[in-house]
Amino acid sequence: LVQLAALGLAWFGGAFDPFLTPPLPVADPYVLDLVIADGTPPVLTGNAPDADTANTLRISVTNSLGQTPTGEIVLAAGLPDSNWTGEAQALLQHVSALETAQLSISDRNATLAGRAADAATRSSVTAVIDSFAADHGWQIIRDLQAGPLSISAQAIADAIRNVEDCGPLTIEGANQGQFGLRDPIRITGNIAENDTRAAIAGRLDPMVGDRPITVATQTLNSELCTIRRTLGAVPTNIVTLALSNGETGQRNLSGVFTVGQNPVVDVLIPQQHGNDALWVLIVEPDGSVFNVIPNRMDARTQIGQLSEPQDGFHRIRALHTIEEFLADNGDLAFRITDGNFGKSEIIAILSRAPLFDGRRPTSESVAATAQALDELLATDADNIIGFAAAIIDARP
Image 1: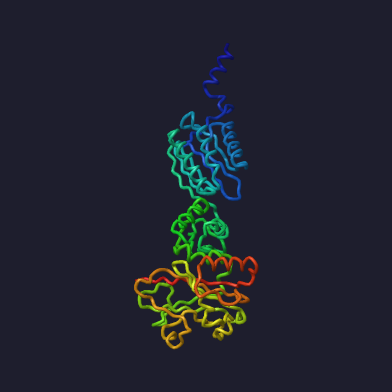
Image 2 (image 1 turned 180 degrees about the horizontal axis):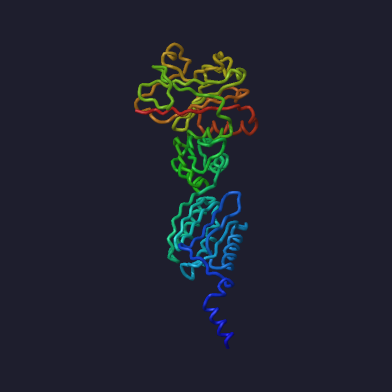
């Protein structure tokens, strides 16, 4: 009895304390952090009430992300409540849908930053996180970006190709053919209908993430766009059209001409194409086509016969000044008159040999012209070297 009593005194006196498991430190706040980064294993750090729970959290992250997390989980007392570990584990799983993430949990509060693969994934993760917070009484601050991290100009071109209705559109803003996460995307060119602008944006919105999109297109009409559609795959970086004011000689970059003005159009072609051929036409708003070069007054089409090269270019005047017309009525010219308003299109096509045998009718329908070009492209596509098109916009 004396021995038992001594042992009891020793127990209550703390003599065996060094041999007992020390109490866990109290974590306040109770935390858990998960970092998901490109090209590295996930990192999981924070607190857990015991080793089994810590292992469960690690396994959960491994199963969700396919990689075992690094990082230290410190065992600690101070759980906010009995549901905390299960809810924190669920939150870790929700975050795993992101490409990159920084989740910081502190008691029942959390901040989440990261990047989703695309806008749809961000919307899905956002909905799940918001629902989780509402259901479990958490406060979660989130800042999620929508990827992809990089997207090519070619991918954008492929996405909008089927909605181009007035020739190829131009994609601006890429850096070495790629758009970064925040790089703005600008689409320019011509469209046949106003609704096409919305169709372009509709194709791009799901795939470009947070990148701002500007569709800065000019709406023409179906008739003006017919020839452009036919020539869609033909290069546009060889032939140049220069518009100017016949009275002043000043360049007109906008293509807008008002009553009384005399539009002048020059075709610029590199001098190495002197033995090649040129065809110039005007498409009127009503869908009629007026053939300018060649015409009934001048059947020549060879570049070298139409103009001598100067400063590396052949400059061929397709529409002349009024003064030039008065001096030679074989030179085509016109002036904008009251009521004669609308958009006309001038198109210059450079080819290795004359496009057609003999002259086309002075005036014909755009459908007939497009059909003739379709047949030519089907039988001798290599004959066409390049083309250029410009709009003459007649206004009051």
